[in-house]
Length: 213
Image 1 (cartoon, helix red, strand yellow):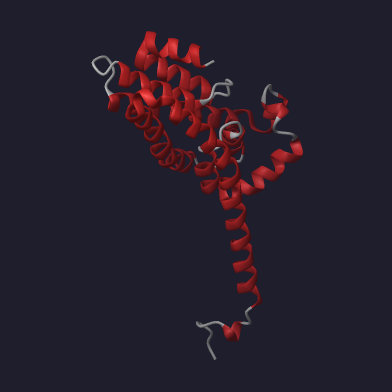
Image 2 (cartoon, one colour; image 1 turned 90 degrees about the vertical axis):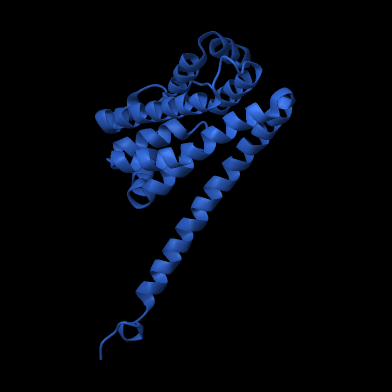
């Protein structure tokens, strides 16, 4: 897979990066981070042919366009998406119903966190569309997250240069860590919000600072 990605980017440069990231966003089983790292490394090898900041901008565009298409597909197809391959393997009707509830309460946070979670990113963004999450909010929080992830991998690969293998090992460790850390942060936040809301409901009206006697 890495050899295929490298050959496409070497041959088509910016267009290759854009198309690969677009396909990745649409659910094609290609690792997005590997595409970004490969693009950054090729910019290191051929600095006269590849402008680093143009590569970052093109990568951002490919990521956001792919994510937007998935979102719009969810909005267009609605719950029928559970009958479509490959989403029917991930989004069962019961799981979809539960995720829609989460999106109604924590949609912006889920979109932001989902950008860092390869493998379940496409189903999450599809669910955002199904849940009628406002597109402008989806695009805003997706872009904010992409402004972190995309430049980090592209610039890191360009910086590491010949030590690219070290970065790849870091990439694997980072992906494993994110699969643990991101859901954990979301769970802690949700539990905290529920606890705070419950405490607020338990306070008698006369105990509130703004109560009137």
